[in-house]
Amino acid sequence: MAIHELYAYIHIKNPVDAIAFYISVFGATEKFRLTEPSGRIGHAELVFGSTILMISGEYPELGITGPVPGAPVAMTLHLHVDDCDAVIARALKAGATLEMAAADHFYGERSGSFRDPFGHRWSVGHSIEEMAPEEMQRRYTEIMNSPSS
Image (cartoon, rainbow, N blue to C red; front, side, top):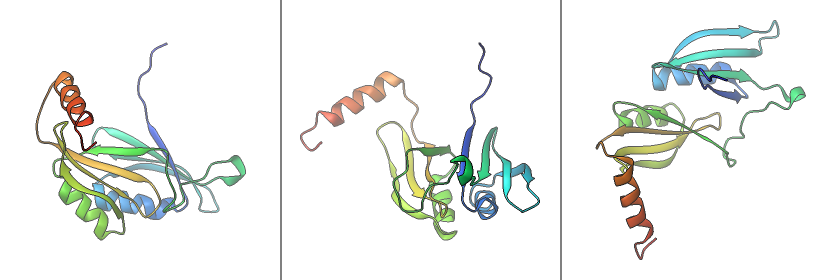
């Protein structure tokens, strides 16, 4: 079996507003959407650089619901950008809630995180230092073995 691609597929209570948010904040482009006569979005695809994010509205009758804003979530979408501070600022201005301010991290990335107004958690970062996984592990081990951890 060959795997060709992996797509994140998120479900949102209000996908029309979410699509507008993702286009405005991230500069994503809409590839297409399939809309039911009732207006419910059955499927949409947004292009983030070379990656597709799939989106649908909620289908509670099928057990498909979006996250509840403010409630715990089971996953995070990570977006690697040129300037995470600028993206986070745009997101907050557009109604996102800051979870972690941008900071430089031991693994060579400056990143921060926020919850979008639709309940999804986003981590946004940019590279500040290239390093081998062995160096990341060395630094991680050092941090975990420090007295303050």
